[in-house]
Image (cartoon, rainbow, N blue to C red):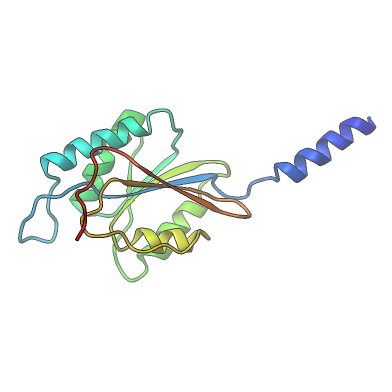
Length: 170
């Protein structure tokens, strides 16, 4: 019994119980069509990137998908959400947008994982709101970055790339 207690205590120290979701994957929406309107659709390159996102996360368990109401974020998430039979939640874009995204993520069941498809100027604030490190907003021509944030006592942020390389930003 003593060694079982020691193993249980060691497990509690090494693997503390989670009270929050385990992971958040964050990406910017894919490439959009240049148009005068405020809600453009994805370009052909953007549609390919949305498929690349689905493929890049094919083995990653996801429990929730959060987007904004804009077509470009919903279309970026669509192939992945459809393949997982998940219904994306469009979080309104207003002055409380970041707080609303953070609250939705933190309300997920413990140990779950979420995908957030946002914008170049919202992802860094969402990462900070979840306790992650400071990071700069994405450059306007940056589309290939994928961030994986672990939600734990000491959140960790990993940056990867997916799909075609973004052009060099000037």
